[in-house]
Image 1 (cartoon, rainbow, N blue to C red):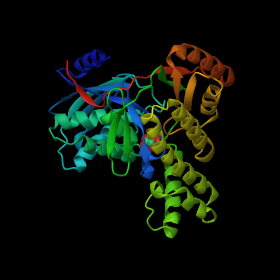
Image 2 (spheres, rainbow, N blue to C red):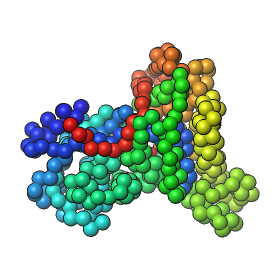
Image 3 (cartoon, rainbow, N blue to C red):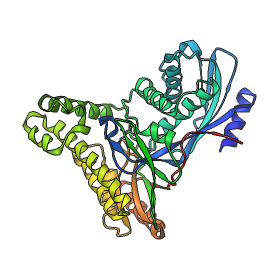
Image 4 (tube, rainbow, N blue to C red):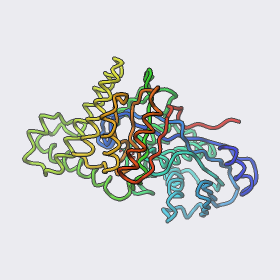
Length: 383
Ligand code: GLA
């Protein structure tokens, strides 16, 4: 793949580019907890964005999206959000550099990749991180990875209009082969732990229902969590986010909180507790227990948080009758994208065959399955 990207760069702009890569992510547990200062368990995967980049000595940024066959150009002092969806992620990152006082110098870049779009695998975070990292090297700004992660997140807020948490960008940048990241989204303390799946594998089922996080539902969930926090803080001043809320405190405030906001908060409070329990289970090699938590999370996301959809519910519910599946749930922001499943290695083919047929019969849609491997985070590609 990176040969094509380099080739395209040479034919469009000439010269020798430097190549960088940044992966998509999965999340084992801890959904919609990141912007509530809670816990998450993501990992970077073997699907990535690759960019080829070089300075051009002109006051202009020239970009080409290989997979879309689409080009974009802008003068460096005119950077602002545009109508070109994909360019916004890159311009948003460049704008963060400008905010830091870095002089934006012109560059050319071609990018492409194999992260399916709209599948909830964070192709946008991968794009942002690839460029945050590439521009740091291009302009020799010597930033820390965590600074770049925060810049990538801000690019999403300011140029894509999604008030996302930090999980996707963090996972893309800090991923480690065969390890899951246990991240505390308040302190940003993290550790990598090796996940032992034994004779099981992680399989993603892509519903091919496209979610649009920008479509306000995501930001609305975030606002509902903030509203709940405000009301709870009135009674319990030590509460600064849903991360601080104990289930009994929430129950005590049931009458004071709007019923819909209550449901949202209840999901988040319990999801945080589930992640802590999940880590203990993984430590104890209890994959079965972990799988059960995945189902509980899914039901919370579907019923209380209301970010699932009939197609994802079908994919998850279908697995409950299959004894070789330990756990399943919708993954990511929701409203489409993938479910993540823990499936016995020897029966992966049978699984994919059965679930694809049933899904097609039920929804009329062709499902895709991805056998994902856990990979390293953002890096320069040395050839
Ligand atoms: C999207 C956001 C993340 C996170 C997840 C839900 O992927 O970008 O920050 O909130 O949804 O867990």
